[in-house]
Image 1 (cartoon, helix red, strand yellow):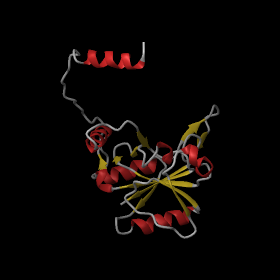
Image 2: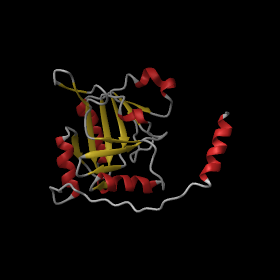
Image 3: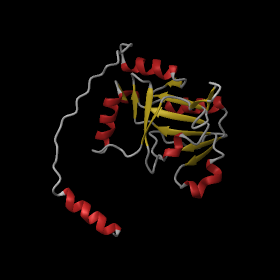
Image 4: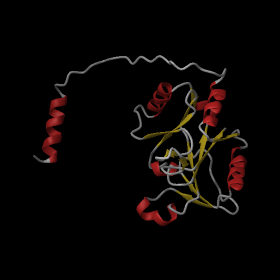
Length: 209
């Protein structure tokens, strides 16, 4: 049976499929330990071994430059949908992620750090939500030893349910690829030794603005 015939049969069957309407129900069972969502997010992100930088929209560019300088970054991979326009930073080669990995393989695997825009922060888990897209490919947060994430502090929500609902409302549909990042990649080997950076970044920095 051809692909076209299979799809035609599926479309025909959907016309007779019974539709179920239901309302989702969620109860947050985690006790919040801090008075504000920002304080709670900071507490748990720190426990997840992420570096946190407190900034604001006015000082964001300068604080980013300080992070890059202090980390000794010379080559930076940039998503193309950042809230901050990154001009040439002295002593740093910036590489926009606007080509496929096949076209840019050698340069991508020589990257020291990457920078992406986080879409949401989850306070009670201390994690950051990243949405993959053509402007922010999935590998942006995984390929470099150091991943820098920009997060609007007004987008910190109480729990994962609220975070997913927020992401769903962004485009009236839940994105097909969402990454929730707690901190640096951690792996335990057979000797129970924790190793950082095996399946992702060895270091993560979240800049709150």
